[in-house]
Each structure stands twice: as C-alpha cells, then as structure tokens.
Amino acid sequence: MKYCSKCGREIMDEAVICPNCGCAVASNKAGKSVEPDEVNVGLCILAALIPLFGLIYWAVKHSDAPRGAKAVGVTALVSWIVCIVIGFVVGFATTLAYL
Image (tube, rainbow, N blue to C red; front, side):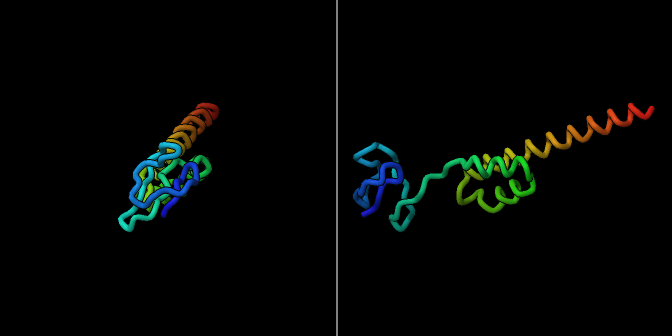
C-alpha cells in the first residue's frame, strides 16, 4: 500500500487518484509514490540573492524536478540580468558625474 502525498490516507498501489481527496498520485516505475514537483520559494529567494547557485541548481536538478528547477533557474537569470543592468546604470551615472 502507498499513501497520498496530499491527505496522507492509505491508498491502493494501483491507484492513480486518491479516492479521499481526488489528488493525482504520482508513482515511479517501481510503483512507489513520488512527491510532486513543486516550486520551492526558499530556493527561488536564494537564487535571487546568489544567481550562480540558481544556475548550478538548475543544471543539476532539471531532469529530476523540471518545474522547480526551471523556476529557480529563471529566478537566477532574472537576478543576474538585473544586477548587470544596475551595474551599467551606476557605472554610466558615475562616469557622467566625473565629466
């Protein structure tokens, strides 16, 4: 027997949907239940603060957890682009101040 990842009730091994809550039950080839791929907000915040972490996380996890890894990777790329744009703006403003 396996358990629903949402409500925790015991369900049959062949079940695709939990009869109690209606949640889809993911399973691997061995028939064991698998946690659904969710976006982790904490990892996205960390990727925004340290973009290199986000890109490395995406490279490592994109095949295991594609949805969560994509969110972290996109957050890292956006953060990196924002940092570069801010750097150019500050550099340009500083150059104009000295002219």
